[in-house]
Length: 392
Image: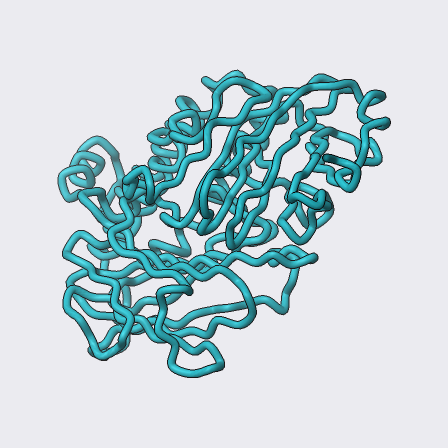
């Protein structure tokens, strides 16, 4: 990092400090993203505009996570919201992230209220600070937690050695961050419900003095983490490399479970089974998706754009969880994906996008996860299809 900044200082006139050089590097990175990530893709003008908005949201999150975030004085930041969407957000999920330093011990406290899925994961590896797609190195979910009382209060020790808490997530010197994930199956998606705020707390076990004013060197390091976060979310990341995603339009890939496949080198929780693919529709077409839900703790399907951002779920039906779906007696479903509702019992709104992504999540699935069947039909044909109640 020092070498990178020194090079920037040598080639830039009027650069007096390391942090100023880092800001120049950030500007160069934004220009590189625009040149080699956005405009080189075969995007329409509207999609290019959407990609710039995505990068702007990444930049806002990066500053909150890495400029204001401090592993020595940790704080959980809600990474997504109804208006900030990134890295595969979910209308039925709420995510909190905090930087940590795996050489030290931390205590996480919270309360599980209701029937939500709860998972806490630490991530690390040889990646640089700011790189988000790091392996999960330790994980615990609500079924494995020891609770302190009947109210659902829990306490998790995070650190290299066991602590006083009965729940322990082991870390090492390469551990960079911890994520808390909450999933809900409510009629009103959790992302639209302001009463749902399961904010956990995190603190270092050994109390430290209040943070000092940022030095030039420390701000430089934080800005370099911002740059790394931006790069790993754009230039260095390709959605088609997801192992569970089909690259053939109007098809989905085979179910992919991270735990059973021995996959830890992914930012997601290992309790998740994914099914994912892309849709491509012409005006007047409907993509029909038939299938059957597996036995699992949580299930939902989400439409997103090419940047893994969910649709505007505040005003549109862009996701369906198991409670929101109308199902047959055997758990079968029929979902219409289109720009307009063909009077279907289950409808996902493309918002007029010709193409996008389909993502299924099944938490703690048991047994076989059936693969949905997809076919393109006309809008007129879709209006005469039976509802899920009549499926057999």
